[in-house]
Image (cartoon, rainbow over all chains, first blue to last red; front, side, top):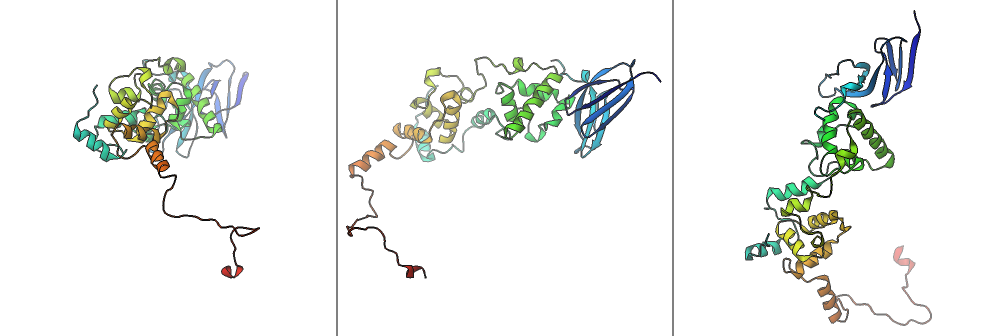
Length: 88
Length: 233
C-alpha cells in the first residue's frame, strides 16, 4: 500500500473541504476524516444539509458523499461545482 | 392625481375615525404588504409562504441557490443585514451573526455577487409610497407635515397607523400618530378638536377639568393623612 493522505477537520454546513472521494470518509460530531491515496484525484466539496422530514427522500447531486443520516436530515459532502444558479 | 373631496368620500373618511377603509382596493393592501421586510412580516419577499423559507442549515443545499439569488436581488433587500432580517425572527447578536456568516458562505458557494445583487441604485422603484400613489412625489413633499400628502393617503384608505409606518420608512424617523391625527382634523377629514384646540379650550376654563375637587386645610405643624391601625385589624 502506498502513501496515504489524511484530512481531519471540523466542518459545518457550507464548510469547504478537499479530499479524494474514492478513499475512506468518516464523519462524527461535526468532524470529517478522509483517508485516500496520495496520488488520487482530489475534489473540493461543500458540506450540505438535505431535509427529508416531509418527503422521506432526498436528491443528492452527482458525486455527493453521504456523511450522516438522522433526525430528518442527510448531511453530505457535495462537489462544489454542483453549486451555482442556472443562468447567473 | 387629484384628491377626491366628494361629499361621500369626506363623510366616509370622517366616519372611519382614523381606521383603515375596510372596502379599499386590494392594491392598497398589496402595496402595504409588499413593503414588509422581516420574518413573518406581511407577504414573503420570495415565494408564496414563509413556511417555504429555508432554515439556516438548509441554505447549504445547492438547490437553494435560486432562492438566495431572488432574495438578494429583491428591491427591498439592500444588503445581507436586510436579508437576515427577512429570514429569521431572531434578535440576539450571536444568532444574527451566525446567519450573516451562513449567508456569506452560501452566496460564495453559489458564486453570487452580494454587492452587485443588493445594489438598488437611487430609484427606489419598489417603495411603498410609489406603489400607493402610483407616482413618486418630489422629495421635499414627502413629509408628515404635508397635509396634502397625509390627506391623499388617508382618503386612499390607509389608517393613521399605516400612514405613520409609510412615512416613517421614508427616512423621516419616528412620525407621531397624534400629529397625523391633528393634521386630518385640521383639514376636516376627521371629526373632533385638535390637541391645540383642546388645550385652548382647557385654558379658557382656567385649567379646570371639572368633576373631583381637592381642598387643603392647615392642620398645624404636621399635615397629611391620619390612619388608624384599627381600620386594618
